[in-house]
Length: 348
View 1 (cartoon, rainbow, N blue to C red):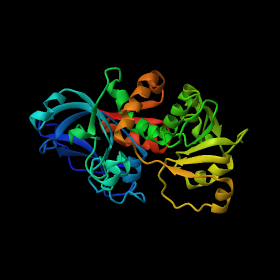
View 2 (cartoon, helix red, strand yellow):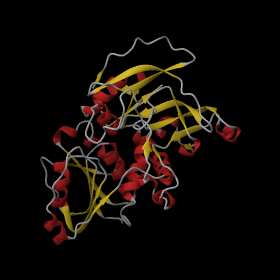
View 3 (cartoon, rainbow, N blue to C red):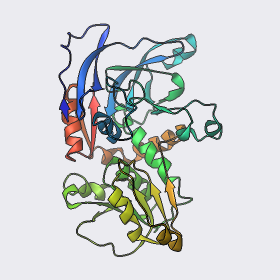
View 4 (spheres, helix red, strand yellow):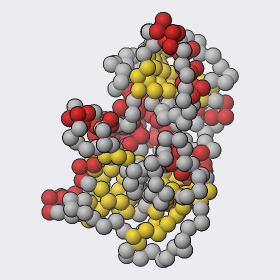
């Protein structure tokens, strides 16, 4: 990932901030100096402490299929923790100086799915940092309904992991109940795969997380931190069929290969997003009663469950996070793309 040439940056002043934006040239990001966000009625201003680099940020910067809606110049970032430093409206005064996480998925609250509590599939869903300016900046504005105060046991740097952990929480809820000794395969050793595996392992399931041989040094080797076993898919065979596969890789080839590992009557949960269409042989699926479940994003209550997990496992999680200053976003993106880090997080 390369940093595109941008306008000359002024020295930091009271009315300007640095931000990482999608560049016009595919595969580039750009650091810009933008005006501080101006608060509308009922909004709050968050001073960003940490913001994770997600695969969606990389796809947006690459102008990948499915991310055409992300506008050039949009400030990226949706895994955001920070502190409320200004509010509009007396009703929000209680939020001042609170450490918070910003929910990524901004829902309407009034459509059929929202009324049923399924906000991740809101008919009018917008994602901060993709549909509008996000948290790879020094400041970001947001409506208070989309922030959650951090529990005192959760440090603000760990809180940048709340959003991806919430996605994993949401995906595991698709299975009615994970039982001790269930055999589970997680495909894809990225952060969502690791977090999904951590949750299943926390429920005492037998968990393997798969990747390729090239993934071992920086990713798969860390599986033991969370009582998971690494599985090198291009070198090994699984000893037994599994009850559940969580497909977190985003690889069409991996999605198709999921079924060779799945026992009859087992279930597949597709969590990743894919750049390519995938053809599946439905007759085989019907004969084996293999349902495909899908999981997208997260709902507000998933953040609360995620916070409990981050508090419980924060000492292990510090071994898988790499922190970069905001102005080194290019390096963070590049090392993420080259799989030299498991999880990159920017900080101010």
